[in-house]
Amino acid sequence: MRKIGTFLVMLMAISSFSSAQNFTLKSKDLGGQASQKEFFNSFGCTGQNISPQLSWTDVPKGTQSFAITIYDKDAPTGSGWWHWVVFNIPANVTELKAGAGDISKGIAPKECVQSITDFGTQGYGGPCPPPGAPHEYLITVYALKSKLELDKNASPAMVGFNLSANTIEKASIVMYGQR
Image (cartoon, rainbow, N blue to C red; front, side):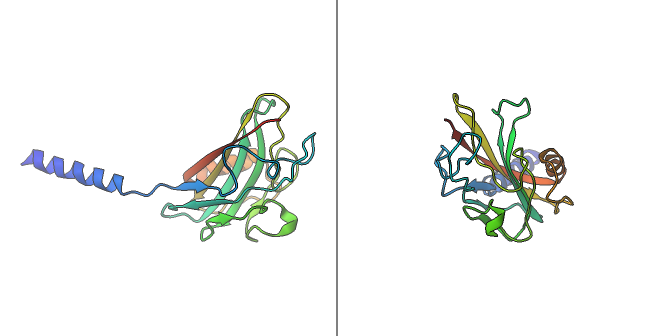
């Protein structure tokens, strides 16, 4: 009888695991490689510097806000390069339209905070790797248990520290860029 009880508990666990939803990040704009649309327009690059459309599904229970980062681990800095840091995206928002990283356009929800990047500016700064090998850009959405008590002048490291302390779940996609 005890073996049957154990078997039933295991079966229920497997069943609930297999029907669980997966927090997922998607983009209609990205196909693996950054295009001139996403590339930066400075530092020797001549792109349009338009942040990609991003959407996410299967939001974890308890999510109070979201954050999005774009990070280049391959940048020749010793610490990578932060291309976009946006947080306090309201919990009822599950998409940022293309161009939302341009603060002057007001496309992103007004509650969002787009803090400084490693370019030293707020909002999106697209890929602009040095000529040579391709760089990997990790785009991550974070489901957070609270809003972050930070402002637009928060460094990427400070935002990252607060993301680590407040993340329920995260989902990522990768794009590559090369010149």
